Image (cartoon, rainbow, N blue to C red; front, side, top):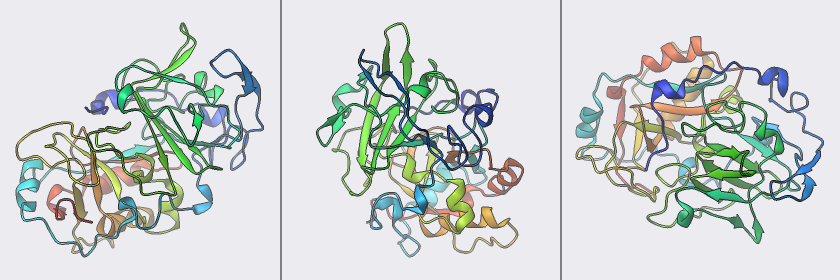
Length: 347
C-alpha cells in the first residue's frame, strides 16, 4: 500500500493563504509562536466540547527531540557498514537520478500541528485499513482533530480545507502535553455524514521505541511514523539535522527493520526501511548554511525509505520560510551516485 500521489498531483496549485488566516512564522492560529485560546463547538459526535485548544501549526516543540535518542530515526549510522548489494540498489535507482526537496512553502511539504492535552478527541471512521488502525491510546479514544481543520487550508497535506477527496491527505497532530503523535492518511471531513474519515490511523508514543506490529501499516506505507523523519525549518536553522529523513523511491521490494509493512515486490528494488547515506566524501562547502545542515544530517543519520513515489524525494515540513530557490538547485545537484546503502536492517 502506498499513499504517495504522483509528483504532479502533489503540486496542487493552492494559494498560500494561511499567513492571512493563521499567521506566519511559527504559523500559529493566533499569532506567531503563540497558541489558540480554545473555542466551543461540536466535536463531530453531536456533543459540545472545547474544539481548538492551544493549536500551534509548525510547532518547534521548544527544540525537544521527537522519540528517544536511541530510536531508529535518531540513530547515528555514519559508521554503519555498507550493504553488499549497495551498488546494485543504486544502479536500480539510476546513478544520475537527482534528489528533490519534497517540502517548501505551501502547498509543498507536510503540514503538522500540535494541540494541548485538553483538545477534544473525535471518532474517525476508517475507510480501508481499520483492522490495522489505532482507535485511541492509553484509555483515551479518538483523535485530537481541531475544528479549524474543517474550514482552514494547509492543515492537511495537499492544502485543501477539510482534506478534499484526492491525494495522500496526511494529517499529523502532536498532543504535546501527553507527547503522543497521531497520524492519519487519506483524511477527510465528510460534511454530509458529519464525520471525519481516513483510510488508516496510527498513534505513536513519542517517549517510546514501540514499533508497529509486523505486517501492519501506518499512515505511511512502511508502517513508520512520518513526522520524526521530516526536515523541519527550525531544526535546519539551528544546526545539522539530528535524525534520519523520510525518502521515497519509485518501487520497493518487501521490508526490513525498522519498517513493519511492505508495499511492493519489485525485484532489485530497495525494501521499505532501507537506509541511504550520503557519502562522507561529498563536499558540502559550497552550499548555504541551511542546506549544509540538511546534507550533514544525510551523512550522519541517512534517509529511510518509507513509501513508494518518486525516486529520492526527501520529505519535509510545509513552512513559508523555506527558500526553494536555494533548496531546489542544491538537492538537484545530488544524484543517487552520491549515496550508498547501509547494511539492510542495521541496528
